[in-house]
Length: 305
Image 1 (cartoon, helix red, strand yellow):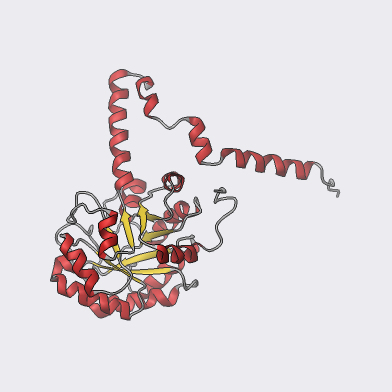
Image 2 (tube, one colour):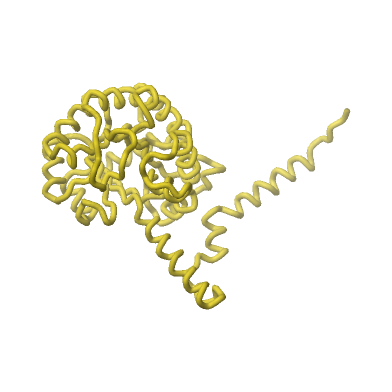
């Protein structure tokens, strides 16, 4: 696959829509550009960019909405543009009211994302799998969804409405909200923190629309396979922090070894080699670009004054 930063895919949102027509799309979480390149290299067709991953990894903040829309869009943009596969990203609660959502969508789309999800939590938000969440009114969220739909330039840019209400008002309220958000123009519904396989299956029966499932670790949702979600009728399954958590544990373990042994030699076999890193980031393509540009200008006519 060509290097995305040199030859970008012209219409990733359209490509994502096509993928959704083919079956359930699995989206591992990528928290920076190099992780995104690994996701693509492994062979996944799309990826997810987690708000928690950016907040925790870039700034060291908890996932409670500390980072601004511009900060989030910029970081997500670096990640999304580094690969040819499409990406959807977490946009929290839109970073304000409906008018703020309007600009958020514009920024995410401008940065090269193929879609985003908005949640119906109050400001400040909480991680979707923690207790103590609060949600805004249905009409308030409908305004935000409508603003998001109106703001997008490419009609294929995916607007996903995340429903956090199950933990607050119960399953039936979550279903009712899902229908209201679809009526406001949402392309897909993301029911957050359902707690049993039966709830996921029943939600899909009652909400006949494209659906996203969040298979995060250490949360309220039991561990279900992609095949189970597909059987229930979910179109997207995200694994938002799997790679991030693996990375943290690997870094922690290796630094303990370094501290104890005073050398990294015993860790070499666990590392990505320099050659593999250079292959992943298309190092030779940039060297070739440099050589080609130098040749073009050195052989061309000299300037005069």
